[in-house]
Image (cartoon, rainbow, N blue to C red; front, side, top):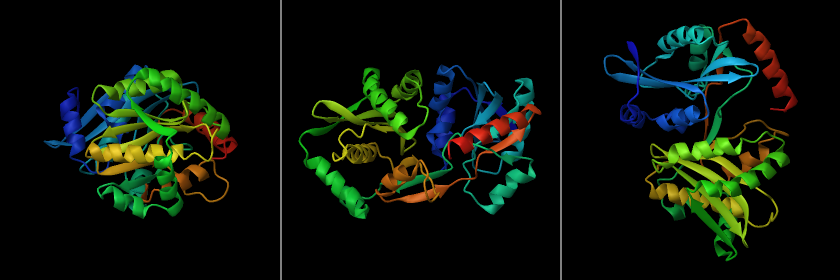
Length: 333
């Protein structure tokens, strides 16, 4: 097997289409987004002799240290983790990275966990992408999709459709991100998390917009935006990546109607799956408890991936690990 850097977008995207398990974080455009954010990016392909795997590598420079990130990958038709690791170790030393962080897109099983353990990986103290997601098969007709939803979710959607003062506005105009950002900052304050910057959101939309792979949905109630979402459409899958709500009018089912309109839009674009992105499987007082219940109300199924894995390159990693563990504990995650 040989590893080569891929610079042809068509080759990369065509291979991704041929693999079932994937997310937009391994798309060509996600690499472009990270480049816009100032990160160094590599797109590698593994050949044997045909292309059997691809993996995106992002060099992340943070205050706590430098690391190579492989987001939800590699996308592969064979087991290629060992050869990927050897390539990453060489690259990490060249780039003076302290560790490698790999977020696998492998189902969480004993066999897959052992695969990483035997190669010297350790479970990371934090994750960068969801390890537990909620997905919905949207190949059924709209009536069947509604029928399969939780009763109160279906009721909320129908009430939203009847409300003449509530409408969902779809846009790809960067100017409309202002509305999302305003509501997003309110959401972040309510749930006590650090929001992405407006620059981050703008670059995300710009990176996918030229390929018609992104949509901003704003819920307008009596002239005011009270909920918003950013949906990415990639490789026949729709991803609910960013969401926000002001809770100013809690009885108005704006967020429910946004999801329903996004699902209908995904069907129009020939998507077979709607990915609600991250949820929690933790019971009790978890920050994502309400969000998890909301997403599950639309029906669907859970997917649990192998937890994010770290591979130490320098001894500085131990300090970074201690810092991230402490931060996770403080955030009750």
